[in-house]
Amino acid sequence: MIEIQRIREQKDEVLNGLSKRNIDATKEVEQILILDKEWRGQKTALQNLEAELNMISKQIGQLFSTGKKEEAQEMKAKTIELKTAVQTVKKTEEGLESEIKSLLYALPNVCTSDVPKGKDESANEIIEEHGTSPSQETAKTPHWDLAKTYNLIDFELGVKVSGAGFPFYRGQGARLQRALVSFFLDEASNAGYEEYISPLMVNENSGKGTGQLPDKEGQMYYIPADDLYMIPTAEVPLTNIYRDVLLPDANFSIKLTGHTPCFRREAGSYGKDVRGLNRLHQFEKVEIVRIETPDNAESALQEMIRHVKKLLDALGLQYRVLRLCGGDTGFAAAITYDFEVYSAAQDKWLEVSSVSRFDTFQSNRLKLRFKDENKKSRLCHTLNGSALALPRVMAALLENNQCEEGIKIPDCLTRYTGFDMITKKG
Image (tube, rainbow, N blue to C red; front, side, top):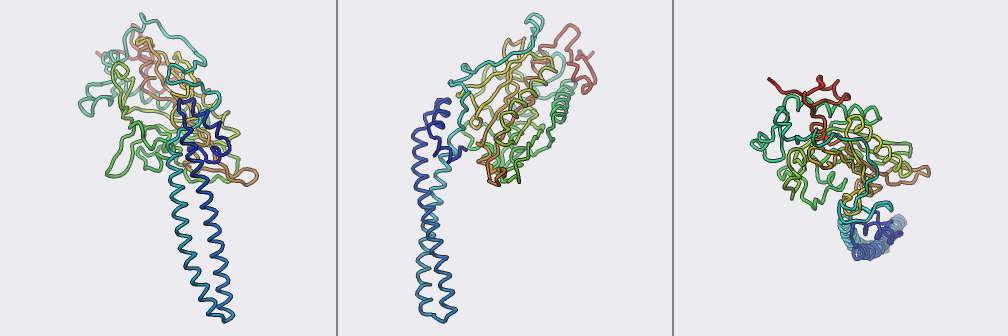
């Protein structure tokens, strides 16, 4: 949620940042400022009424103590009128505050100055590219066919038991999936991230805290009987650990990691882009989350980017890093860098990670603050990233490492898999 003070003091900057998302929020921002001015007026009126009520209450006590009961009773009648006025003004003030919050909740985060303007992924900027992939002649079989040939993933069984987008991993495929999770978690732990095993369902306040709710795109699975949501990413429970927390000083750099299944309805997905592991309703992911001071946020972002690069380098995958344009940047993010790996058999790039800086957008919703050196309460900055999402990593590994003998396992994973080659069973 954008800070109201930022809108008051930097209106043009806010509007410019939102315009990078192709949003003209002039009307909404002006409405917020009008309501904010009215709210502040009501707040002042309420404070004045409460001060007057306190003063009269003290006077009544003094009158009673000096035996002036009649005067005290007269003033007591006045307090009844003041209390009624207090309740009236308080109700108006609370109504205005609720209206302002509703408008703020509807606005996405303000994009940073270096986010390119654009409507969709076609305007994303390729920042760098690393590695090479085998030719399509060498890696000609797509992963869904490899998965069937080597009995690694059963898509049809998933359809039978649950529906499309819920595959079964089996045998060496299950082992490879578990190896990837263990490798990613170990690398995160080595980089100083504390590992958590979190709940897979969260309440409404948690969804609002990180910006997944209100769910405008219908991506979250909801359980009405319990009023709970299946998590779309471990970002939600991990970041909400610090909801309503005031850190005592500025001497912190909080690093969290967790592996969870992720659940996404992926409304509107269809066609070739959903084939195989390309787009699933349930998938595994290791997430890294940072909570930082404003001064440390950018260096933390660059450190997270280097961490993801290290993972992909170790896996030997060709990848590229993109800075997303405003139209492709997520609702809560101020800036996002995507990592894509190249799938030789599909001749396409597959997104495997998004690393984002949220500035104060999430912490303002979460009421996550710290005390600075002057003991002033300030909002923390939050960041998160996929390190990594498994389905498309698995797809690229299978396709790019196929050979006559089978499918070669990257060296960094063999100590977890217990084998260095996937071969056909006799």
